[in-house]
Length: 252
Length: 252
Image (tube, each protein chain N blue to C red):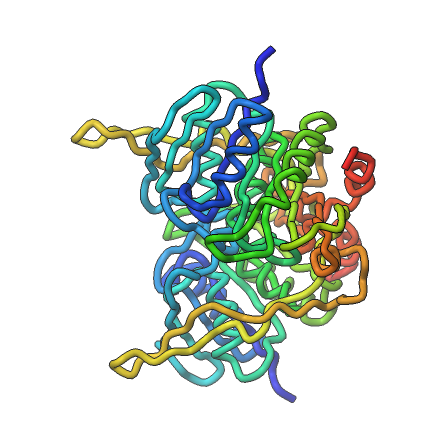
């Protein structure tokens, strides 16, 4: 029997420590193909490269592992891999391990989760892994056994149609795993203004996350704040079904 | 009483005909501030500019209308507008009119809908308008009265928490309006391969949309295929609530 084929990408770029950890873990489970951006593509969401072409090249091939780098976004990486690179359908797509969490509303900005949504859209079991540490020397060791366990359980059980997983880990000791929902909240004070030597203003994205429901114990933010890994089952159908009748009652 | 403040952006760029039409329409309803990208930003999803700063400048100011251009993505435009440009909270954010539909899964790639999701995330009534014609000389005239009607009804009635609207119009005669759900489907044959003069391969994004449920009459694709405007109430909470217990039953 073939080993499972596992496709890996990320948004921190092919040389980020997080994707190296994830690649090493996944080679314990299956045959691995990595198709990762050739540099940082953080906060690229589901962006696609349409105004210019994309390219990819093989950078490593050994028993059970082939690695490519790609000039595009994380979503481009998944599309290119499925259309032009892999010769059989992956059994699992994993993205990360992202340096920084993709909990709460960050799921819509995240390049990591963009890749995961793209895998899910193609009907492939897909999981994003992130850790609450943006630094390039983040420690992933406490998270490793959980990443393996979650990937193995996902392969064993599958997921419902059009559903993927958004997995986020705290730093430090892990209290356990909680299946959670996306926390309601938003970013505030989002820009740092600077003045260039010619007097022009420019703006760096920054900001503070404001949790709108800090006491709700079923959110991903609560789980992370209390030392748990959060797993949010995530959908690619954005329809607000409950609001359909509301709008039908408008005078249209 | 103040007129409603309406913030407008798009992903085709500040000089696209679609945003000019939308701007002219919205000045009939309220005071308008346009903050649009300085060029095309199609398929930018909710991408954010994080590796370099963004800038904006005022390009027009007259009674009831101020226009800015911005170096960033559509989502950057909304964030900049709310944080740094407008001096009161917009009553409505509209994006478009996009040259090309954002129905079905395209909602996750669309820069237009990225801006709308961003507005929604900030608790502001937000609507994306798109038309099924990619050409720069698309005819919007048959859609105009509906855009006004939908915007006015939205202002009158509001929308439930964390819900926005994805409105798509067909070309030609309009049969009416249908409140619809996001159609299930995916893109196939996504790349056109080319060879450069030095023998290297490069790949242009293209593809065919494959509708997985062509007979379902409640989808946005069905509405558009049958001459209707589709309105999909759209959520920023991507949690797959129905799958939470499924994952809780895994051996984790």
